[in-house]
View 1 (cartoon, rainbow, N blue to C red):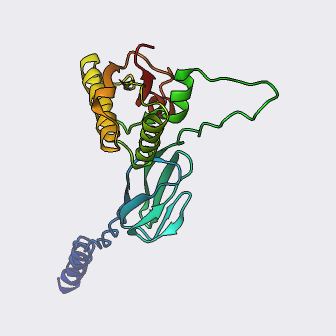
View 2: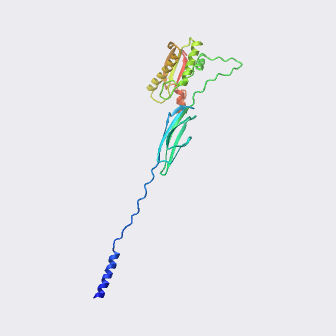
View 3: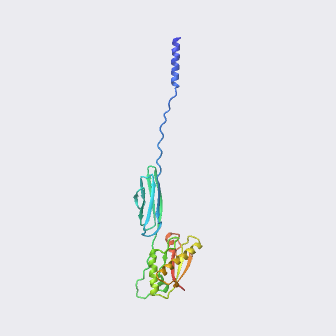
Length: 247
């Protein structure tokens, strides 16, 4: 019957419409996270005497602001000269949209040996022993780590000592004792101490002291003047000591 046929067609159309596949809407992927900044800093040299120059060099990536503790805000990469008066850790901090990164380098500062001051005159006469007089006129000299090169500031001490020995004590003969800090093997330090003693001997001879008046000996790390495990203490032990022969 036409009336029933039309109803059947309408019902089928409704069912087909309800079963039609719906299109799924996929949201766009989130943007990738910002990269985390990186930071790297170096110092040259890492061990100096107070007041000497140190060259800081650094580089960073993905950073907007960069600073060095004790220096202030700096460019994202570069270099700068500093003169630390005490041992200092330079902390580099880089910040950017992705967070922060940091790095640290430490510079060890060694105070130069204190100058020997002559005692103020008193009512009574004080007489120095021959060895004390030698130590006053020819004090210990000191060396950098793992080095036997005579420092420029010690060359003047050696020259003054030669002038004293040649003009006032021409009969004195001396012994140079080479010493090291306690790092490294016994054999290595004995060889290094020998090199340090001979380096001082060569400097004295170059300044005009006869080589026949000089003997050398190495004690390696056997005769430390300081026993703490610090750079300041190790520096005191990296030395040449001068004494009179037969004393």
